[in-house]
Image (cartoon, rainbow over all chains, first blue to last red; front, side, top):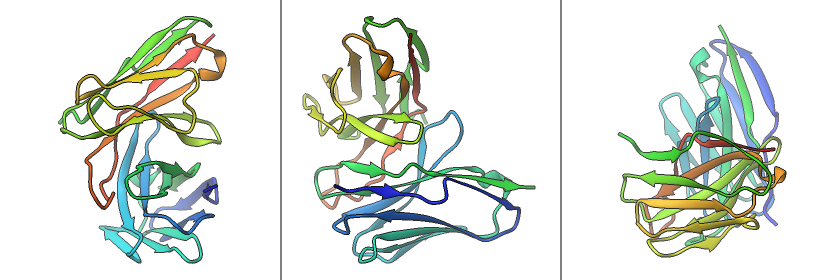
Length: 113
Length: 115
């Protein structure tokens, strides 16, 4: 059974720091992995999607990497800002055509001004 | 840009009552999903649909029913509400893609309390 874990559950950093959020999964047979952002009282916003054949994806100050063999993904946020404060979730797609994502429980990030 | 719209945003029910949550998307997406989000458990898939007139069970379908009579709408019904169904419910939609590489678009959620 696929399990997705995100550690730490919460993180506070001063503004300007570069930071890394971690996501690990138990079954390496994934089809893709997505990183989402969730603001309080809001839904999820897709940040980056990494296909299983890819090693990383970049969007602005965000960079996500994927290492299927070790069951790990990282989300790198450069030069963090208070506006980055949110909960970040990762989710893995178990197989083509099923569209059944397994979500982690998220890392709650607070960037202090 | 409306995207994915969920109604209602908040609701309080008594045990045993029934209700329907509505999800509407204006992006012509084939796939639609209902999730529930509970503290410490992440999002769990309740039911999903791969097109108009189709539905399928997800991870936690018991106590819920769904219908997709129109492509743009996906309804989630609680037949007889129980306190264990107190949760935040999210609807999402996405394009069909042969390579399954289309991101999901989420609504803002429905906060449901069962007393």
